[in-house]
Image (cartoon, rainbow, N blue to C red; front, side):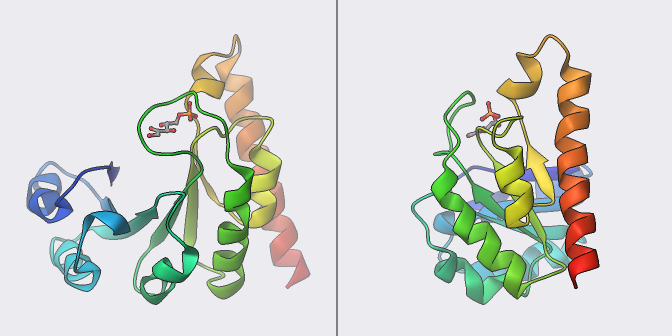
Length: 162
Ligand SMILES: O=C(CO)[C@H](O)[C@H](O)COP(=O)(O)O
């Protein structure tokens, strides 16, 4: 279970989340003054590490940590609530991360659905958070299947191109 911690002082929840059975702990780069130490604490609690950035945070700020984590989460809306518009201008962050870190898990979260999934998959995201597009559909199962298929096809294409 991956916990995306949209909280200030993420340090304080590492041990409680590990005790609750979390397998991955994703914190916001903006919420800590010492990412290196937090990464170490998460690993010492036997969880995988994810690091998230808000739209206003550059990928250059994330870059020094990307090689030390299991997952990078590029927010494609301002964190806060579901149903917001997908920010296409976040896709260069995803493409850059994919080009530099071919085996890193890269997640996108916010406004992702059938209209935006192709952009995310082509840029290199392999983990998708989708809220409204799934729950507001009359056929959630087919939306999930579509999102999965588009991502799988892009992954396959990248592996053939290499
Ligand atoms: O929590 C969020 C932002 O804080 C996410 O955007 C949300 O979980 C995903 O929902 P949606 O697909 O409707 O954007």
